[in-house]
Length: 310
Image (cartoon, rainbow, N blue to C red):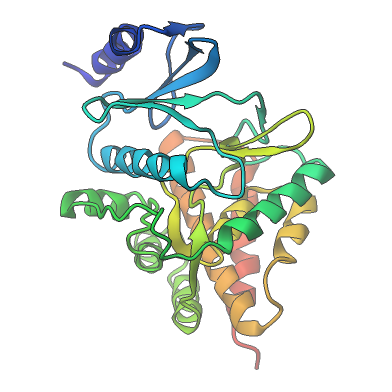
């Protein structure tokens, strides 16, 4: 079966699979595909719900799905102090789960934000990040699932998040980015030096694109897509936010970083790696727009911040 046929089958059979196990399930719209999974909205009895299915994905995607499922199970009994969807249905022998569907719109519908965030959203986002980073990186709610050797190799090749190796996935990714020309090798070397001086880890969402944060009409935030969450470099979430934010919001993000030189340089190193990843994804998508210039400017700016003061 071709990949296209496998996805088509996943889209057309999900509703029946779920209804067979959960007779109270009623889909309200057709299933649709995202970059990582298949989703379908509907009702579980009288409760608004959404089915999240692995679909035909394998390799690191199956590992990510297992991590997210494990975290949602843990949050059933010990929720975070920030809002996440509740796990409603979880059959261990299926490749899908049913989550609470909460009314809200993604803060950004695209990977890179096209407009500044509303003031209330920015304040709540930075507040929630503080709550999240205050959770111990060794908290037992974080899944203790390590990728297989083949899964880890796929993660490294694609510069993908790996909370089982909180700093190594970034440092190895920086070295690779310099080697394959996503970054200037001298810039990558400066970033590696900065991270060697500050390898501090913290709890993080890991995939903090603002399409993974929903805002309600009252600007309350709902955090979704937790497959990459766990222990990461303490500046990773902020760095990923920064590279995809508009200019008015980047200053607010930078204000969350300690003023000491070591912290400033390690933030710049994480942001430089985020820049390299955005370049890789643009290459793969064939994007042709003005964002390419911003990424070139960002590399120059961050490299300057990484250079030692004479």
